[in-house]
Length: 498
Image 1 (cartoon, helix red, strand yellow):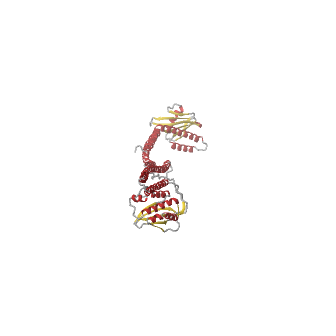
Image 2 (cartoon, rainbow, N blue to C red; image 1 turned 60 degrees about the horizontal axis):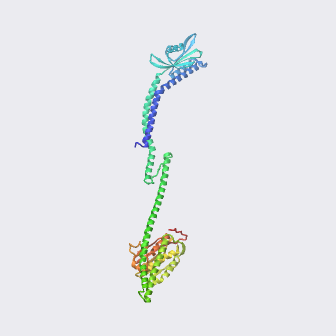
Image 3 (cartoon, rainbow, N blue to C red; image 1 turned 180 degrees about the vertical axis):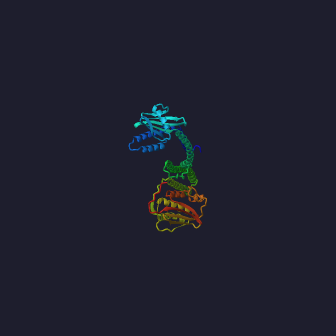
């Protein structure tokens, strides 16, 4: 990747390295000789003051002074001659050359003031000049000075070594530069990989986050800026996951609300259709018999009494159906408050059985309920009575064959199950889940025969939903069993309003 940070960082470091080497070469080539010349001047000046201090020393013998001067000349690559005036004649006091006449001949022009050297620095005590020896075609740096006690000194150091040093330094710098560039390339490969690898991991994490995958996390524990960024990415990932989860939950709730609204609209349409269908027959009967009475089709009192009974019977059926619809509507839309009470379920069932005893005997049906001991539950007593009544009434209307009904109470850990079984024809499997739907009738002819409206089991389902408990139905070998469960815990149970 030519635009990657790794490539850019490598290019920058290499550019800085090469630039530094080139700058060093330029400085070497341009300023090193002058700097070296100044350094040599400083060496000559230091040597001058050192010779002066040795010459004025009263504690040192001549042999000791000579030895120290030789060491100085050898260490600093300086040739020197120190001359003193004795009886008007200059004689060499100290020197470190085989032939002192060479330096004496160089000293004389300075004493006479006829030297043609290039003076670099001059003061009252000494002068520093640059000269060229025509015999060897070599350049030298010379210092001529006058000391106390009429001592004259000439110091000389070759300059050719400066140029050689510059050339050697530049050549060495070139080799070092090549080595440093190659080393920098190798180091940058590893260094940039160390820096770019976590960045690439962060980029991969960001890519996963873009695809809404928040499981991948930054696992390095670096304490640098990249580590801080990685921790921030992890926190961002967690917060995004929570936020998106909340948004999905809100979206699901909104979708449920939309579906519920659609369902309510469909239920309203279905309700109107079913109500109009259910009311059509009794209204037609009432209207027909009322018109018969009005037109006096039958003049005898017995016929008119029959007409009136039919009208009253159909009106009563309509009244019951409307009441059941209002009850169901109140339960389904939360308008019927569920009041939790602690009461005896056994006594409630016995009361319902007493109320339907006449109807059961009229249909020659035997009802068996063996529970005698009290069973206390938490529920709405009125609504539970409605559930039990609907189950037992439904069992009486559909009981066949042996015409036997069994009511049982089964205690569990925290709940009680009530079941109502009646012998008779099983419910077809395709209809068994539809019995809770309003106005749904498995056997429409028989339902109509005893005046059923198909609402009773819908009321049972709505009541159990309001209690947040289950109810159900299943076929047995010789009949059908309906059941429901309620709480029996000895604590107050709060039921949320649906």
